[in-house]
Length: 392
Image 1: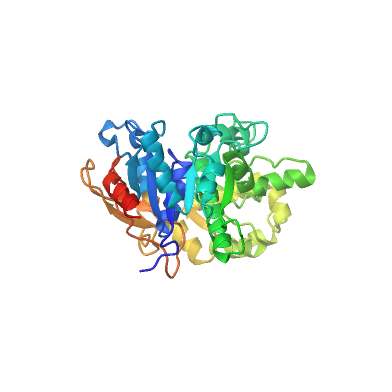
Image 2: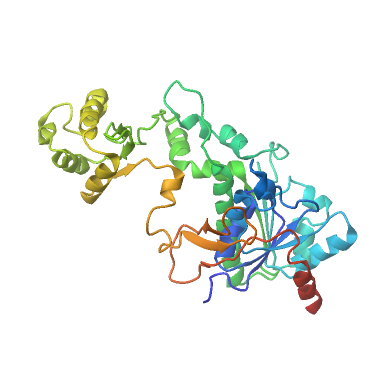
């Protein structure tokens, strides 16, 4: 099967999450990813988490490194640095997420590497970018959640800022980097650049996060007013777009934000009289009488289990979903058919050698690798990579 990025080779100097997630997505599109790891334990993410049985192959590492190749290089040693340069000279893309200036000090900066390989697309990922007043600030996911304003948006009014419960900044930054690399590859393949077609991409976690929050940042840029925090009530602020407790104690999320949806909801719930009551009749009335509307809905939703409401209302075209734990979500039927769960065999993994990682999040007629292979052990592909360099 042909893949969208078949024949594209990536020299991956990145570690932990944002950079490796970018190259993970590109790997699933068919690119060959050569992971350059530091001596010792390699990528720090290999030992991430509290369960020491998974050291070397932690679940977080597995999540973003399936199917890559690994070589361990000490970039401070001339011999290993020359191997790194040989890999870059034969690659289409270089990805790194060291602090700004580190790769240049090692002799692997973007100007030197693009002089070595004019077709190279060089992507640097950092906290605040390769330029600007915060260039040298150290950043990880939760720091940028704070400095970007993301933490200020969640929770109920009057409560302290809250971190999103997974590394959302790392993930969205990696996705942004993959998107930028694809753009540069497309531009290069279209040709017309006498310098060789390469490019330099500067991806900042802060920039990517602020761009990701367009629905919150742009309203402030236009009006000068911050959005109100609405907790578990939806972006619309409608009381019919909120959480409710079902008979079994499970919560359901309702997303009725348009008038025609409320009409259907009232009929399905057996309360068409709401359509004639002043406090329920239209979106503005419902917003002004939010407590009354939510109390009425709460009484009704307490009469059935959450899964029943999810099925009944969804079948009627009403946005509704049961609040699930992550384990319940990844166990839903049909995910493999949508290429969302990709099977892997990882020899020696505790408990179970047959596991899954997540796919790209979209379907395409062709071009996605649904069997990327196990993540590499440190230095697993050294001889293969050295033989490849020697043969060219």
